[in-house]
Image (cartoon, rainbow, N blue to C red):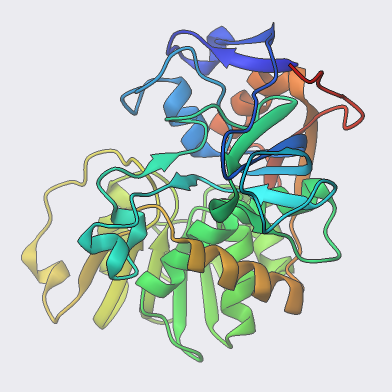
Amino acid sequence: MKAMCLSKAQPIEQNPLELSDLPAPIPGPDEVRLRVEACGVCRTDLHIIEGDLPLPKLPLIPGHQVIGIVDRVGEGVTRFRIGDRLGIPWLFSTCGQCDFCQQDQENLCDVARFTGYHLNGGYAEFVVAPESFVHALPEGFSPAQAAPLLCAGVIGFRALRQSKIRPGERLGLYGFGGSAHIAIQVAVHWGCEVFVFTRSEGHRALARELGAHWTGRAEDDPPGRLDSAVIFAPVGRLVLEALRVLGKGGTIALAGITMTPIPELDYGLLYQERSIVSVANTTRQDALDLLQLAAGLPIRTEVQTFPLEQANHALQLLKKSQFRGAGVLTTDSTSTAPDL
């Protein structure tokens, strides 16, 4: 199979992903194998490739917003059949036994493993995953349109929940890429008044198309204080900007897996019971809830597609925030893998 492999963490400008010809993986017990149709390009992939996160495995095939068709199943698989279209998200597996797993916080499991990080991911023609951690997909989405839902969509959805935003309240979104362009649609559906803070005029235009009440830069004063905010951009100083316009008792959710240092802040910005909370991964229930909502609205994903071989280029555009929505890699979906 063709795959884009990482053998050494390097800046994406150095084209660290190499097109390789590898044996297709064989599903083990309780695992399914997907013939990959599409895989979303996520900023977490960029952090992995550039070494911002410690790498537990090299060489590595990144990618964790995977859409594909089941072409082989392992022993014991009962939920899915050959021919089903499924999605593989960031959360690959958990222990199922620890206090976090037992209390509906499997996203915090100490031995959780993640797709395209601990295990090879979807920048390839084939990928395997446990059947209990993959998801059936809603009708009406092409593979490319569905891919961003599996991380950008789900992490944005969990971030909204962590921000404690309620219907009818005023929400601020800082940064407006693949995740925020989905989250705004959920927030608007909930009846929230959404303010979007981003440097890009193109992103501000998309935000207005998707229902933003106001758009501007982080340094601008919005027409009213925020009840909640979600920071998608991995820029620590934005915490101070969001606190500056956050109302009493408001909450800021930090949606990134990494962030530049948060500057020292005056206690007066945090006083009046304002809160800052991080968002760490997602649960399977988050994904199920988001996919159900996506089908009902329906959520509209803006995607720009690239062939698998152009993964480096797509990530370079992502680094420069040059997508309108989300980037997605596509494969030749007619590929077949020999039985070994």
